[in-house]
Every structure is written in structure tokens, then in C-alpha cells.
Amino acid sequence: MQETSLYLVPTPIGNLEDITLRALRILKEVNYILSEDTRTSGKLLKHYGIDTKQHSYHAHNEHKSVTGFIKRMHDGEQFALITDAGTPAISDPGFLIVKECVAQGLKIECLPGATAFVPALVKSGLPNDRFLFEGFLPHKKGRQTKLQQVLDEDRTVILYESPHRLMKALVQMKDLGSGERIVSVSRELTKIHEETITNTVNNVIEYYENHPIKGEIVLIVAGKSYKIQNEKNS
Image 1 (cartoon, one colour):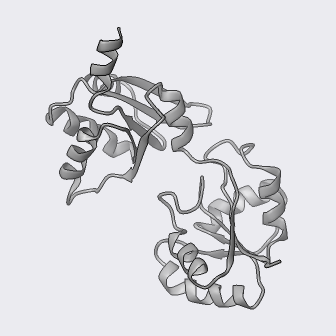
Image 2 (tube, helix red, strand yellow):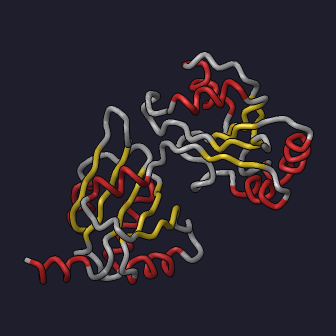
């Protein structure tokens, strides 16, 4: 049976207890760990007494380094890919090396584990039978167009935003005529100050005008027909 060359290992998004026993075993057994930031990952590895050597693998070096890592996999070395938090390749580095492994017939295993958008979606109370994950909005070019597409979507939409751009996104939604759209903002998931606010865009804007916005943000946007459906069912 072909040995696994690359393991995709989710890491905690906040609470260090949110890692599986299998993930800890794999991180100890592989030859090397590919880390988005070796300093950040080093804290997790030290916490669990894992001394496997790390190699830096991030958005700025992955195109240059992937060929060398693939060659070493062909030579029999095993790697685990981790990011600073959550599941690799979900708005984080990982797609390129996975694509190359698939193309070259190398075996990949992806472990189940932490990712920010799943708990945010489930606890939002918004429909989750069908949803669209869009990741981060464009910073500048195409941002307005993308937001309009989000607001025109019938499915629940999941977005990632930074604290300093959250209000910008909400105000833009309001300016596009969606001040009464239901949204859910989750921040600091799994951490001490975890918070989720589910309300209209207008009310969420008002809330954050009086409360500091800190931590990683998941923004869940109700589909355009959600309010209408609720009114019909009430």
C-alpha cells in the first residue's frame, strides 16, 4: 500500500485543546512539518512536546519551495502541512502543494479538525443546508462588485474579514440597500472573549460603533430571500 506523502493537519483556531489525538500523533511521526509561520506553530508544538523539525511554507515562498518538497516526497520523506490556525488551504497556503501532489500521484491525507467558518455558520441560526464560502473580500479592486454578488445570492454566504475592515463591509452593504439584511458576526471563536452577534446590518453597525472590534472575524450573510421566507412562515 502506498505510504502517505503529505498530511494536511488542522490546528486549533484559538483553544489549544481543539486538536485531535491523531493530529498529534501524525505531527510526531512525520519527517518534517511545513508551517505557515514557524514561530506561531512552535508554540503549539512546544505545548504538546513535539520536536519534529519545521520548514517554513507560506504564501510568499510556496511557488519557489514546492518543487523541492515534492522531490523529497518522491524520495520517501513524509510531511505534515499546518497553518497558523485552522485547516490548511482554507484561505491559507496549501492548494498549490496539494495540486502538485495529486498531479504526481503522491498520496495525501487530510485530517478532520478545526476551521473557523463551520462553528460560526452553525451558531448563526441562519440556513446552513446550502451555503457559499467566499473567504476574504477583495481589499480594493472588485470589492463593491463582489459585495453586490454576495447580496444577490439566495444561499447563506460566509466571509472572512479583518477587524479593521468589518465596519467597511457592513457600511457598504447598507449603502447597497441591504441595511435590513440579517448577518451574523463571530469573533474570537473558541477563545475567552468569543462573541457572536446576529441581527440586521443596521443594528450590527450600531453595536460595533460602541464596542471595540478585535480578533479574527467570520461574517455570515443571510440569503436575499431569507427575511421574505420568514415572513411567509410567520
